Image 1 (tube, rainbow, N blue to C red):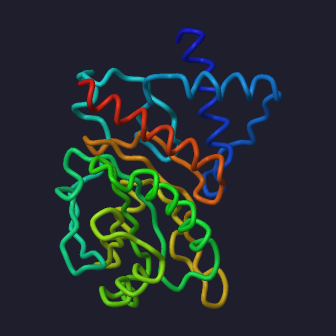
Image 2 (image 1 turned 180 degrees about the vertical axis):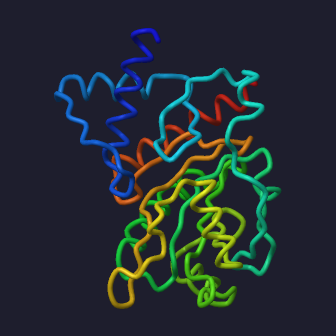
Length: 237
């Protein structure tokens, strides 16, 4: 690995150290190295690929034969807030941000929603970019409930999909495809459930290209910048 890639990796590790739901060892960097890593990472014209819960970055060319068998989000089918099927075909040749929530969440969800609203507004007229949030309480998050939630929170139809469906299917997808915590959905306290603040960036080929802390403004700024990087990559190949 050349020096530039080493510095970029350090920058990525610094971003990942902001994540509260992933079991990484504490990463300590000097302020000078932190600033250098971030600036180089943002200047990079490529993003790594991820294929495990450890989120170890894999630097591959977009035409690499290794991508043929590389981890990708599998086929899925749910219903969104408009009562329409949302599946992998909805995101064909699209970049999307994936996450998990439930409509009555009193804890982290409102803060994550505020951050995702910034992503929505940034790419509101960009048909290449979408948002997908899966409900971890689909039995109560019905289509009508999600529609009301969307209307109350400025969630734009066709841009930001709120998915509901079979609970076991959603949980299986969360853990095996998006590498969510095994604690996803466990009761944490009255009227609240343990779930993830992580947001994942998925490219047009359904590969995971980034993970971000949805509670952290700086991390979401990286997400927006990385979406731009993916857009450039997509249109240049």
